[in-house]
Length: 337
Image (tube, rainbow, N blue to C red):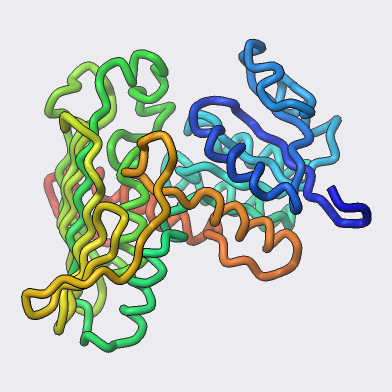
């Protein structure tokens, strides 16, 4: 730490699997932030973060530590309660996805954010991928005509052991949902980012293999957006492998594809690579490596530098989209926004 340099004091709520991505990113931001305290109900994790004070109760940590920002890395049903608790203590929040169990859940947190005058960022980190940023530039340029539609495919592997090890993942009251909210949320978020405001959706959701869990293992949808743009989505965790996500963006004069960490333009039977994404160490390159960028942008916002992080109000949109797909799947009808 450099003398005289302001350092953000960071707290971590939850030291489970996803916290590793946050810890790695914060470690790379050591000129901006220091992890002052961590909280987890499992005392075996004491000492996991050297130099940080360990707590087993979140409110005690918030009372005792002078934190600038709390990273919420907890099971989904605890995201909003933890965020609301941090808001009561005037602590900014960086929330692992999803922002809440559903749109209504997120709205309650937005109210607390506004009343307590804090900032809440949500980790929809694939917005920070180089392929995403380049695709947004292309869409804004108008160079290839208007956007006609998109296709999004997520085919991953989540065995029964995945739900047995952490039972909350298979309970709708605690996870909020299955493949859409837990795995494909980033891809659905990019669909909205590219296509704009949805008008109506017709969806299907159910269980192809994992019949003993409460949440869907497979879902598909047709989504109609404004300006006659449409999208099709398919997601499942019943595949034999964790394949790369695939996003196809069809414009009047060219087709673009994000797959295998690359953005490719297909025009006149010729492929051109336009951008590459960084690959996550350890073999999990199928879900992106932009936690660092997302966290850095949020910290810049806290420093007053107008960071371009994903705000809570923006993150709510993908929750609402998933809510509408599930509503359609239950009713068998189109659902309008």
